[in-house]
Every structure is written in C-alpha cells, then in structure tokens.
Image 1 (spheres, rainbow, N blue to C red):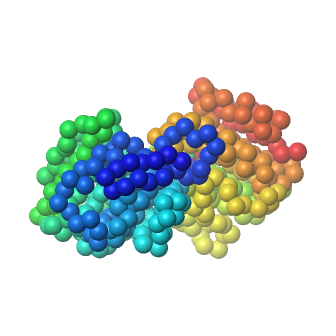
Image 2 (image 1 turned 120 degrees about the vertical axis):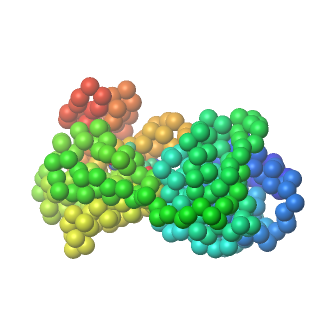
Image 3 (image 1 turned 90 degrees about the horizontal axis):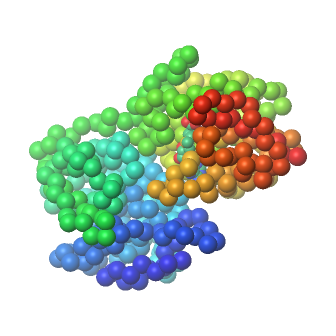
Length: 377
Ligand code: SAM
C-alpha cells in the first residue's frame, strides 16, 4: 500500500485485487496533476456534486470524498478498488454512488472529472451519454498521461462537449478542459455496434468497451473453429468472455450444456447476454457474471473452461491475470475437466499451463496463435 500525498490529504491506496510484492501504484501522475489543479481553483472544499469517470482504483474518489461523488466505470475491478480504498482511509463507502457503464449518470453535476479510458470508442460513448446532463455551469476536466492524448481525443471533446484546451505537461501528464456548449446538438450514442458473425446468422452486438468490437478477432476466429463437443460437458465457462462469441459457439456445439459467461467489464457481460439471448432465447440455461477471473466459483464444479486471456490490464502489461485465470481454472474444474486456451505464440502459455497442470497439449495452431488444452488430474 503506497501513500498518495496531495493538497486534499494523504491517502493509502492499493490496486485491486491486492497482490503480494505489487510493483504498480494505484494512481498515476495525471491523478496527482488533476488533484493539485483542483485545489488551486476557487471551488468549495465540500458539497459539490461531482461525477468521476474511469477512476482506476479510487485515487480521485478517495481524495475528493468531502464532495457528493458519483463513480462511473465499466470496470468491476475499479469499483472494487474504490470500495476497498475508501474504508482503508477511514472513509465511508455509502457516501459514494456507484454507477456501472450500462447505467447513465443523470444528475446536475458541478464538476465532471474524466480519466481517459483506453479506447476512443469508449470515450466517445461516455461523452455522448453524459452530454445531455451537463449544465452551462458544469466544469469538465479530463486527465491522462500525454502518450494517451491524441488529436482525435481532443476532437471528440470539441465535437460533443465544446471548446477544448489542454494544460502544459507535468510529469508526462496533461489536463484537458472542455467548455460545455449547449448549442452542440445531442445525439444518440453510436454504440453498441454489431456485425454478422461470418458463416452464421448470429448478429454480434458489441458495447463500446468490448474487445474486438468492430469485427471478429483473428485469435477468436481460430478458437471457435476448434471448440470441442462432448456429452460430458455439462457446465462450460467462457472466462474473459468479451462479447461472448466463444461461449455462444460452445453452446451451439454442446446443446445440453449450461454456459457461464464471466468478465470484469460490465459492457462485455451485457454484450454476451444480449448475444446469447438473441441466439438461443432466454429459455436456454446460462449465467452472466461480472467478476475478477473465477473468484468465488465452487471448487470442482465445472467440466470445461474456455479462455482467451487478456495480456494488458489497466495499461499494465503482464501475464499475472492469465496466471490467475489458469490457476483458478484448475481449482474449479472437476477431475478430468479441461481448460482450453488460445494465445499468441510468443506469450508462451504452454510453459505456464504445464507448470500448473503438469500437462499441456497443442490442439491447433497457425502462424500467430496456438490453442492449448490442459486436463485436471
Ligand atoms: N473471449 C473474448 C474473445 O475471445 O473475443 C474476449 C477475449 S479478450 C482477449 C480478454 C477478456 O478478458 C476481455 O473481455 C477483458 O475484459 C477480460 N478480463 C480482463 N481482466 C479480467 C479479469 N481480471 N477477470 C475477468 N475478465 C477479465
């Protein structure tokens, strides 16, 4: 746990989930810049109605908790991070309103603070959706590391919010100031978008922050071509499901199996649910769970886990999430249960899987990707 020192106070902050020997901080220089900047403004120190968008692990929410805060994010991990960091600083969770990305915050906000999300589409969706609730008097400030601010980012603010300026860079971070212009016409969000899954009649719906939202990912394409079929599979998990294509094709191949879709993104789970219900109607048994990997699943309860793991998390590159997904899969698989993984060749997942399961077979491959299978025994 590290100490964030800003004019608002000193705050002990951790990432979520907490890990032994964590090397990454729970905030960045853009959070510090924004908090320092806010302190210099002539704002009341408490009682403002503040919307905080994409606050990673709660640095902004914790430091500004004297105000009336709405925390809006697509990430379940971020929400949990805030819910952990507030009480760690003797602050009360009940003072913050948590909204996930499927809901739209609808209040008269004095201040809207936005940490830029990773994707342009996600930012566009967020700006379009909050615009109708901004007042002439609402102050809108975004913050990010310089490398994440492009001309196209500023154009989005100009297009949807109003005249946009940026600050000087400090510690490689920058602030964006957008003046609310009520003359800019409000439009409906261009998301979710959809495409027809090649070779099928499935219309695949993708909310704005979903992996490979415009077309089928080439790794996923190889994976669905080789998904297994067996009467032994009664319970199948699509782990890190994104729009749920993998679970959808697994459901088609295994008509009697129950499919459980899980992801840490609310938009992923929403997309997976819409896609599954469109394909099979609500009669087909399935579960849709927002979660960190497989935390809380019953041990030895599942026959098959299908996984296309993430290898970037909140801009931190690493295979920690994949490791966790594989280890938890082993726990929740029944004896003889199977974990099937698709990954880029260079990620070396076969080594990790062999360490965890003591076995790993290559099912298929192409120049870029491998499909690997490990059996619990
Ligand atoms: N299965 C989909 C496909 O093949 O198109 C998406 C795969 S994408 C490479 C990885 C997914 O893992 C993303 O949807 C991401 O939101 C999800 N993810 C990342 N970290 C996670 C975590 N800690 N727990 C659950 N899901 C996570």
